[in-house]
Image 1 (tube, helix red, strand yellow):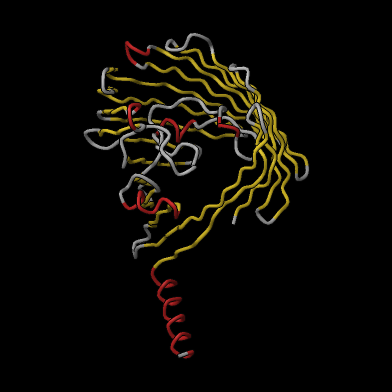
Image 2: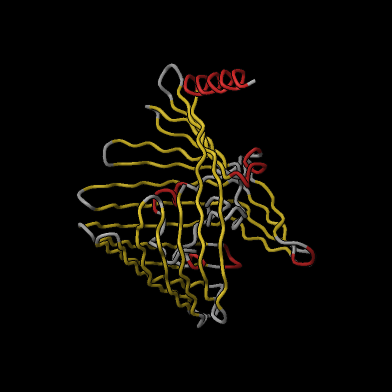
Length: 324
């Protein structure tokens, strides 16, 4: 029996090495969070499968998904799969639109990222924006993202599920049906001498929301985004700006954000400020945060942060993060 197990193990290992590679990784965190009133413990651990291979012609392919999202990954609504070669890289699944892929966001603070209020609003973003395994935005998936790099220039193009899709958001009396037509996006990034400049445009047609009593037709919505990063030794500065046109009902939104990261030894200190003025909101919203991270080596770090928002709520956290 032992010889059979050894032979079987060797056969599996040889087959994997010859045709493809499958690896298991993961991440975790634990610590305490202050929600504005009380301190609570907060922890999680997640596993991820990453698969990769290569054709005889040199085209690489692969995919990845969180193990707890395996069923959604099988349906194309979580995780992603890709093929990459001289033609560029084509990814499909729960992927970001081209504007978000090119421009991205400023830096966050805290071991839980403190509700990620550092992030600007993007229309065409992957559904699991914060990576917690649940849908944060309704976006036509599976979607596709194409990337092509030449020298310092990277071009992006994205498209949502052809013909759009519908989602039911919430449950019971709060359930809302969201309908989306065709989504598309374009992005560009240029990196030179410590500077990164980026821009993106995105749009979704025929957007509507409906509950049991009301239907809200938004028509076509769109967004334009700009980004700039500068790195000089230990200091990294980031800036983002965007303009959203969310239709006649919700109107426009102007947004911008800045952040600074300073690294010395194993420590990195981060601060950010984010601002948004939206027609659908009575007041301008803002948030700022300050945090620090200490790299323990081996994939472990101690992180903490404090954040204040225009809702007059101060939150904070302190804990450890792990990468396996």
